[in-house]
Amino acid sequence: MKTTAKTVQTVKSMAAKLVFSLAVCALVAPTVATAQGFTPFFPFKDSFNGPIDDDQPVSWFPVFGVETLTVDQGDLILTTPASLVPGVFSLGLAVVFSGGLPMVAENTSAQAVVRVSDPFAFASIFTKGQAGPPAGDGAAYVARIGGNGVLGAEIFTVPGAVINLQTDLDPTTSDVVIQLDTIGNQFTASAWAKNMPNKKYHVTLTDLAAPRPPGGLGMGFGGLSFVGDNVAGVSATFSSFKIKNARTGSAEL
Picture 1 (cartoon, rainbow, N blue to C red):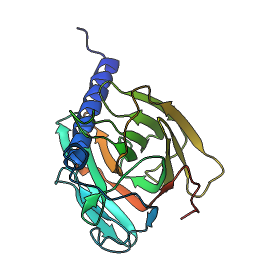
Picture 2 (picture 1 turned 90 degrees about the vertical axis):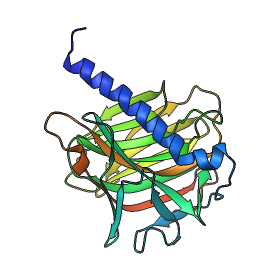
Picture 3 (picture 1 turned 180 degrees about the vertical axis):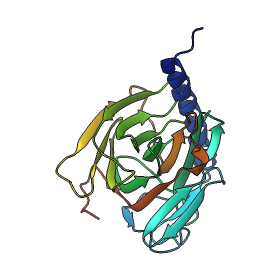
Picture 4 (picture 1 turned 60 degrees about the vertical axis):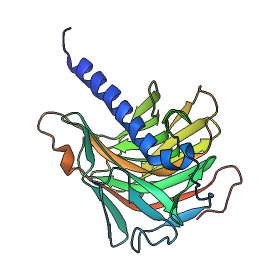
């Protein structure tokens, strides 16, 4: 088979979906698949002004164990993602816990203020993270923004679905707000510059699979590796994270 730049990119994209799905399985399988319990959903805003495990209002934990989560002057900085496919794709995940258990929810509106270190890096938030077989397929609904300005809405599973939109946003140099609104089997990823809230970009996806149960919440970061890129050095900075019920129209946090 003749190898082209498009072929390489397609292979990398497929690998990224597969490893993210496996990661989500690892994230929620201990709670959903084995029914060990979960934290009932409650609206919250975390401004990262204390330890990541203080339950004020929630705690954050790395999924793979290699991620470094550092609180610094109101920022949660995520570094050292796992190299899941060496030379191709790196990924780090942080999941929401409360009272020692993952929070599981649906029909939510999640929002974060993010920056990333490099043009090939990305920051994301996810909801409705599912367990792996036999309880689920490892899917998650994801909103992500890349350092190259590409906004994506993606159902991370195999096979999955994705829709991308090129924007003029640059999270490598300024704060970008990303938002993920999930209602039933439809979700919308939105993004805008923090200092320009009236200029928003949106992409929407409908999940054609069977209705998925409530699932895990969290954030992700990482990068696609190209020649010369050091994906192990990428970082994403979250200066706030908030989530509310999208159906009831909860007051702004």
